Every structure is written in structure tokens, then in C-alpha cells.
Image (cartoon, rainbow, N blue to C red; front, side, top):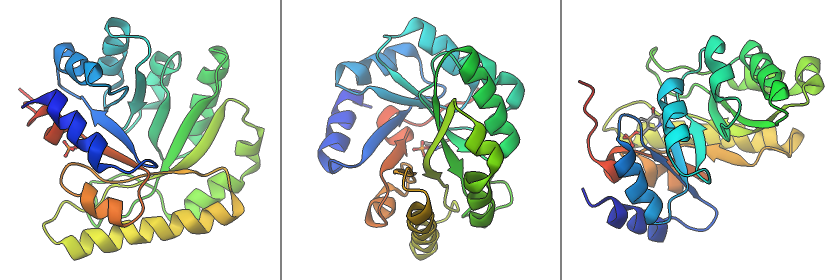
Length: 219
Ligand SMILES: *Cc1c(COP(=O)(O)O)cnc(C)c1O
């Protein structure tokens, strides 16, 4: 894989309003540095421990995004530095993020993960639950977290029509919620296999791993 070439190609392909989150999970620091030298500054990980190690070792102007499912008892490790948590799926988790952000004297930006895929294995809440969280008194009292948008993962399938209808649905939920909560500005959808469809459907943030860094090896 020519990582820097891949970064350049994505930068050219994505229009101005769309952010590239380079998903570097399982990849070594040297690969991240290659992308960094090509100008990439936003990296995403799905394990808190791994992200924390990389944050300690790599340039401090990297923005670290947590894209995976978050266990509450580990929020404290990323609270000092994480710049966006993509997959918030409960008020309880939000409370913990707020508490740890406060201890670090920070405001942590979050996205609510809405379940759009058919698969049971995918996490996320319904559009109604998202609305309930945004409108809740509990959230209104939290001073150290800010929900700035939604995230979703489409069904893993070759059926492009299905992926498109899931992304369209998420975009419509986003637009509807935005009418009442104008602070929502980011819509995180699209990965290596389906980002083109996500672009058509109005994503503002694509999360690209394997087609930048190569296939992952989980051994
Ligand atoms: C791993 C991961 C990605 C990137 O997947 P690729 O198919 O390698 O681009 C995107 N989003 C989440 C939540 C992931 O865990």
C-alpha cells in the first residue's frame, strides 16, 4: 500500500465539507506517521488502550476519534485527549463522558450512533431514542459534553440499494433532528466499501481504514 498516495487521492476526491477520518486500528505508528506526513491529521481507533498508546507516542496535533463501541469504565483513559467519540448509544455513557471531561476541564464532542443496519450485531439506538437524549433534562445539565451529530454503519452487503436506503434513512433522521437541534452538524457514515454511496447520501465524515492502510491482520 502506498499510504501517502492513498491519502492524497482521498483528499482530492472528497469535497470540502467532508472530513476524512483515517482508521488506523491495528496499524503501527510508522504507517500513521506516513499518513501524517501526507497531511492527514484525523485518525480513528476502536480500542481505547490502543488509541491512548498511540496518542502518547505520536505528534500532539493529531485529532483522535474513537469510532468503536465504548465501555464506560474506560472513558477515563481517553478523556484527556479524545477529540470526537462517534458511537455514543446511551445517556449513561454520556454521563460518564461528561464526568470525565469535567475532571479534565474539557468539553468532549460526541455523535449518537443510530442503528440503521439489519444485522443484530451492530450497535446503536433508534431515531426516537436519539431525540429523547437530545431533549432530555439530564443532557441539558451536562456542561462538558456536546452532541454534534450522528453516526451510522450500514449493513455489510453487496446490495448497494440496501446500503443506499440505510444511508438515506440516516440522512433524513439527521435533517429532522437538526430542525430542533441546530447544533447537529456532523454525519459520520461511509467506510472503505461504501463511502461513495455515503457521499451521494450527504455524509460529512467518512471513516476509511483498509483502503488507506491495507487489510488488517488481527493475529
Ligand atoms: C474499522 C472501522 C472502520 C473502517 O473500516 P474499513 O472497511 O477498513 O474502511 C470504520 N468505522 C468503524 C466504526 C470501524 O470500526
